[in-house]
Length: 403
Image (cartoon, rainbow, N blue to C red; front, side, top):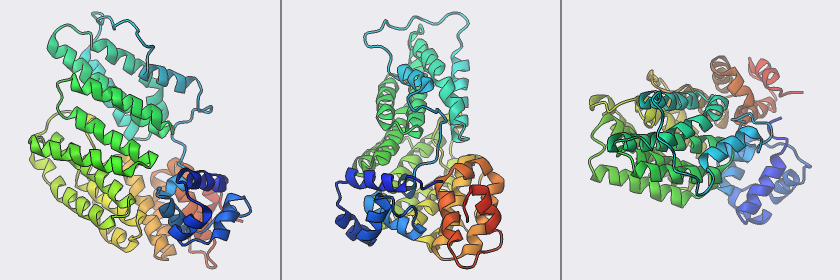
């Protein structure tokens, strides 16, 4: 069940925030008795509005309280695959410099493999990416020993992009410290590369990792600084550059919203969506798989997400109504939109609308839905209603919720 460890997670997050039960109760408007019963295991679940307010009181996303869905099936969190990724990110200190690659080495092929890794990452194929990472990182380090300044700098760009990918996978594994180490090394590689967009892309990944750690002020600060630097340097005047700027702006908006400044966040997102309309009008800079996801569709999806997460479900539904997603919208973003719309319907008491949206989600991403704790929480919340809407029982049986 998705919330079997809800009480333990609540206790850990409350202590991490240095809050007493009374202080959390005051922040969240949830009674001290309910918090105590959850933490002591005398109460194993709570309705979705209660979980929302507890998450807001703790300063975390709802999925953090519920327990993030499993992303990488490693079994033992420190098993062989994790060890292999960690060693690839942090090779032995004072190891010999990499030898130049052999005659069969192809920098173009390495770039293609890294781009494919990002495609699979956005398709939520985390196990596949994790398995490939050690070899990718090893080959990328070898590429930094290529002869010729241009090829060497291109090799560092490949290494930076591979380390950035490793950082994202580490976050999905719940290893944010390893992620920050990987991203710090990615930044060093980016500075030695010839790609002016790589460093701000990695900064954006770092801001996301800070968000996962609850370091919202730091996440907001670095995202805004990197975005401003891009504008000052005129790097938002190409398609790829504008995408990176947009991703940084959306990241900053998320940090602002989580810090309680929803109006500032909404203004950032409105500007980002307007700017996204320019993406298709600007010169294309290269392989879209290697740059940030930013388009009118992704900006609107982020606006929906922020609205529903921070207590504006009516705004979320209005933004989502009649949306047409572009072809380049990653599958993971499409599924997240459906989940957010279902949550917004639940928040305004529209059980039938929530079920209809969840049925669409089941058709699009059944396995993802089964493992997503928020999807289960929504169905469980609907199941407590005295009158079940049509279609709820099959969803409850599919997710293991019910009597």
